[in-house]
Length: 225
Image (cartoon, rainbow, N blue to C red):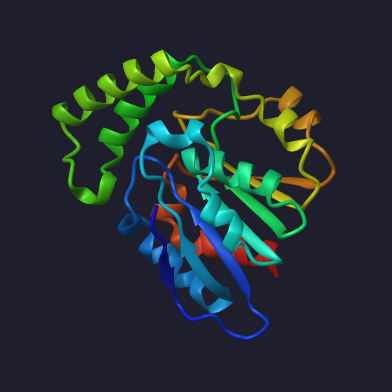
């Protein structure tokens, strides 16, 4: 994995590790990272592959993780962010999860069907725009689904409230009220969250932070300062 740094590291400012989603390349998020640069050094950590999330986080990230780091993540990028928060205990100050998997119970098959349909209709460039969003993209996605299912990828086993009970830092979850991909949290989900977890609803779909980067940057700034 390689890092992409945005902005300069200034004295007494935070380091923001941004774990972006599996489907989109770093350029998709550049408007957001540019807006966050004044608040610290933004290090974008794109996942090398959707297949690699089960291998765990690159040890290099943990070795270089400074004190008082802030973890920012979107969609599938929430998986490595949560693992860093658990394994980097004592060095992570706050964590932000934006439209994370696990908000609602969905089968792997449902998730991939929603992902293909929503990503195509959303017109968000995937993978650095090297793969066009068309029928071929959906076919590749179907192929990935079969491989992931064989590897044991099952979103019905992502119990987000239970996972977060083992992380005692301030956490912000942002979910979009029109997100067909990860769904909406129900009352039981919200009731099981600890007092250290704040939940905010925004008006938008799974790519809210891409479409509304100014609003996203403002909410992130309010939480981290």
